[in-house]
Amino acid sequence: MVFCAKCGASLSEGAAFCPSCGAAVGAAPPAAEPPGAAAAPMSSNVAAALSYLLGFITGIIFLVIEPYRRDPFVRFHAFQSIFLSAALVIVSIIWSSVFGALFFASLGILWSFLGLIWILIRLAFFVLWLLMMYKAYNKERFLLPFIGPIAAKQAGA
Image 1 (cartoon, rainbow, N blue to C red):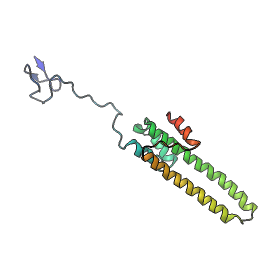
Image 2: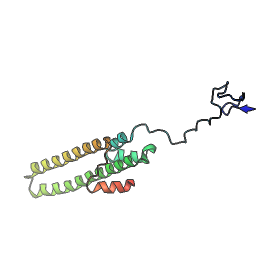
Image 3: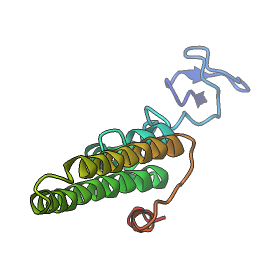
Image 4: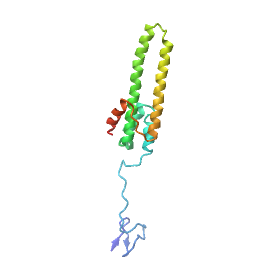
């Protein structure tokens, strides 16, 4: 006597399908998905581009979120986002020190010139930020000078 593997109903000899549940006879039941193997809610290029959105905050978030923390492409862009944000903070601190010293040394005469240079530096970081989001969205692994190789090493790529 042959029984259905799915519902346990008795089957006649040579039956291809179970009359009770309709399952194929002799076929193994579909394997359940292992926990944590759920499909990612967004593709890796979208996640990589979003890792630049809020700088180190979204970079850290995408390094922690489960489906993306194992993806080398997302990890690389998340680390590069963190390092790019850190570079902006470091440049801001250094510029503030230099700007303050030059402002007082020149008695405010160089204020407009130094302010223009600072605006250009910030604009360059903004354009770089947009470029990195664009490159990540187009599935390109664009390494920035100095911080790109460090990010690649941290991502394990």
